[in-house]
Amino acid sequence: MKAPAGISPNTLTVARILLIPVGVYTLFLDGGDNATYQIISWCIYFTLGLTDIADGKWARQSNRITSLGTFLDPVADKALIGSAMISLSILGRFPWWITFLILFREIGITIFRLLVIRGGVIPASKGGKLKTAMQSFGIGFFMLPFPAWLDWFKYGFISVAIVLTITTAYDYLRSWYIKR
Image (cartoon, rainbow, N blue to C red):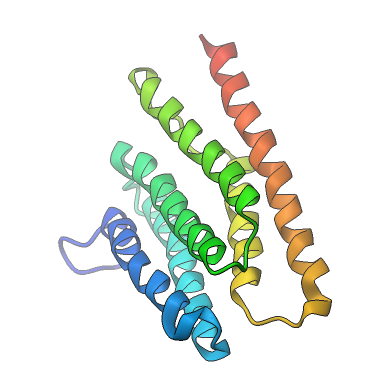
C-alpha cells in the first residue's frame, strides 16, 4: 500500500482514535432515537473498525510493525468499543452489566500489558482479534434500529463476545505465567 510521505500505519491508528468522538456525537444526535442517525453512527464505527484491519495489514505488508503500533492498535480498539458501549448504555440501548464486564477485562488486560512490557510488548493473539471482531459486531448491532423480534440476533453475537472476552483474558494471563 503506497501512502504519502509521513503517513504510516500508526498515523491511521491515531486518526481512528481522534475520530471516535464523531461516532459518539452521532449516537446522541436527536436524543439517540433517530434511526437515520443510528445508521450514520454505525457507518462511522464500522469504517473506524475497518481501519483496524487496514492499518494492521499495511504494517505487516510494508514491514512497518512497531512497538508503538503493537501497543496503540489494541488501545484504539478498546477506546472505540468502550465509547460505543458506554454511549449505548447511557441511552438505555445496551446493558450496563455487559459494559462493565467488558471494560473491566479490557482495562485490566491493558494495565497488565503495561506492567509486563519490560519483557516485550504482548501482541494481540488470534483469539484476541476474534474477540475484538465479535465485540465490534455485537455492539454494532445494538447501534442499528433493529425491530424487537431480532433481539435474539444481537444478544447472540454479544454472548459470543462475552465468552471470548473472558477466555482471552484467561489466555493472556496463562501465557504470561507460563513464560515467566
